[in-house]
Image (cartoon, rainbow, N blue to C red; front, side):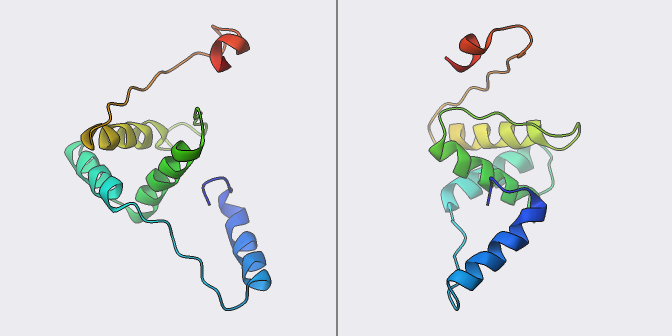
Length: 114
C-alpha cells in the first residue's frame, strides 16, 4: 500500500475484494525491523503512533524493492523522522545505513540518478 495516496486505498481494497471475494490479504510483518524501529523511535523521544509506524514499515517495504528512494511531502509531515528512524533501525540490526541528502538544483539529473 506504500505507493497509494490515502484516498486511493479504500478503492483499491474494494477492487481486490471484488476480484477475490472472501480472501483477506495479510499485512506484511517484519518483527525484527519493527522492534528495532520502536526502540530507535523511543530513544529519539518520538511517540509510537500506529499510523506513523505503518509509514515506517511502508518505507521499509519500498526500500526492499527500489534502488533509491526519494521522500516528498509537506513541511512537518515526518519525512526526516521516518527515514532517520528506519536508518537507525537497520543499523541497529547490523547493516550500517547512511542518509545522503542532495539538492536537486545544485547537480544535474545524471549526477543525481547515475
